Image 1 (cartoon, one colour):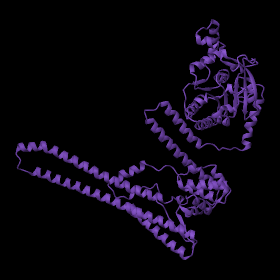
Image 2: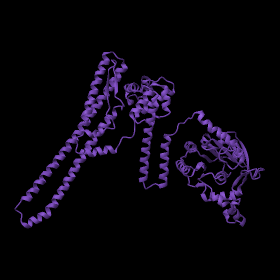
Image 3: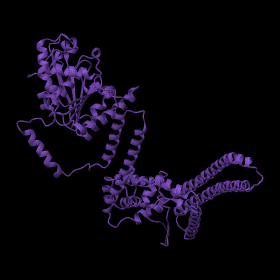
Image 4: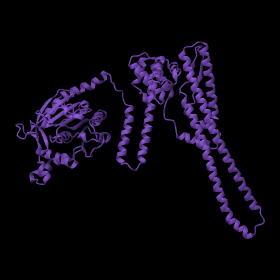
Amino acid sequence: MIMLGMLDQLQRKVDDLTRKNEELVANRASPGEIEETRLRLERAEQQRERAELELQRAQEKRRQAEQLAALVQQQVAQLTDELDRLRKSNALSESDATSANMDDPQALDDEAADIDNALDRAAAVNDSDDQTLYRIAQELSDDEQISPRPVPLIRESDEVEHYTALPTAQSPHEEFSSPRVISATKQSKANRTPPHDSEAEALTLGCMLISADAAADIVEVVAPEDYYHAAHQLIHETVAAMHARREAVDPETVGTTLEEHGELDRVGGMVYLHSLVANAPTDLSEGTAHAEAVHERAVLRRLIEASSHISQLSYSSERDVQEIIDTAQAEISAVARHRGKPDYSALGDIMEGTLDGIEGVGKPESHVLGLSTGFPDLDALINGLQPGKLAVVAAGTAIGKTTFATDVIRACAIQKNTPSLFFSLQTGSNEIATRILSAEARVAIHRMQSGRMTDEDWTRLARVMPQVTSAPLFIDDSPSPPVEEIKAKTRRLVADRGVQLVVIDSVQLIQHEGETADTLRFSASRIARDLRLIARDLDVAVVAISELELTPNRRTDLQPTTEDLREWKPLEQNADLVILLHREDAYERESPRAGEADFTVAKNRSGPTGRIVTAFQGHYSRFVSMHQ
């Protein structure tokens, strides 16, 4: 049996460690080596004792199963004898015989059902026995550090002995002489081992332990979580950190570092670290290829995990179908990003595209590199809304944040025919459509909302309707969606409709947890970071509208600053562009600047900052350039 074989292996390990310990003492080895061997010997003895105890339990269960099977067989024999006796009996009359033929078959059927139940119970015990032995064998196999090659115990005499752990992919059921072998084997095939390459993992780590240059190349390809074995993850993380600190790296120093953190035994001790170096490839440049193999297996495991989660969601009837589809797309995209392209490029590879961009901007017909905001002076200052960049537009209450958002959307989707997505979290889609029509047709919005439109108003609406209705503009007015939902919907529309601009009004209404200032600041930081990642990962321009916390009664200068973002200050830190809106007549009705609005570029990673003066036409629900 497999357990007996493992007991023999453990006993041999105990004997060899005992012999090694005696040799070290006799050769006056260092106290560290003797202590390490002693600890390994104690661990091996504990493993052997545990295996013996589990074997005794398994044997007792098997004995009970055999007794139950014997009892069932005895019942079968008794029933068979009774049936033969009834058939041979001549004492029954013809009528009695008829009655027996009617009644006895039912009784025999009941007895047969009892036998089937008893056999099922015996089989269940037998299956449980097989599974118990398999679990024990698997656990004991996991106790051994998995090595792609035999792990050497290095003696001072340079003699090397090898101990090979039972491969985890091998099913111990193959050695069981059980009547349920076939079903147990089928079950083990169903629970297949996830994709991994233990040999590639060990070869990768061997290269990292030997060469700092090889380690620098490897960490660009594979991360600690890409390893299948937890011990390998820990070794990679430790070695990479030591190289980053410019510390000397070899099995001894790595082992010392691991021991200081109480992790040396988890990775298999000094013996395993030495074996990684001993088995490393001669050409250390091969380490990158092995690292790529490790990474590829990790991607496959993530894909399996994502597929399993998607399957579970699909079987659930409690969630919306579209929500499941969005989640599935997000998870598969996340797996794809793990395979992503290198994060760096040679300057020569970048230069051609850079020169093309510079040349394109210099052409008379195109002075703006990014998407137009609809305000020429603002476009000239910020060079348009850039793909892959996050722009934050902030203002106090009732200054015109939603108006600015619809102005940008109109400029891109209607006037430039650029596919755009508008997340209107505080205003319904019908009201957004009304604002757009009012601004495009120059029809007073209060007349549209009150139903007092003139014939001229209807004519103006009719004139702009074809262009407005054909614009590639998509409006989502879902209230308080989580940022993950925004990300999933954006990803889908980028893929399906080629969306290039995303406007979110406003970020404070994105679902978040913020009962206190600290938790709100944490949520703001996460949302700001995710919005920037949406821009970068999907290569779209993202405009996030934000509320400023102004206190007009406590300050004389009402020009807003980025400090007015308060708990939402992380928006500024993650933004590539920050524009602050201000209207004096919102606070002073008799202001000499009535009807004017300031667009202050408070932050611009790609150019200068400054202030642009525009006109606010509230009756048309729009801002316009002073030149118009």
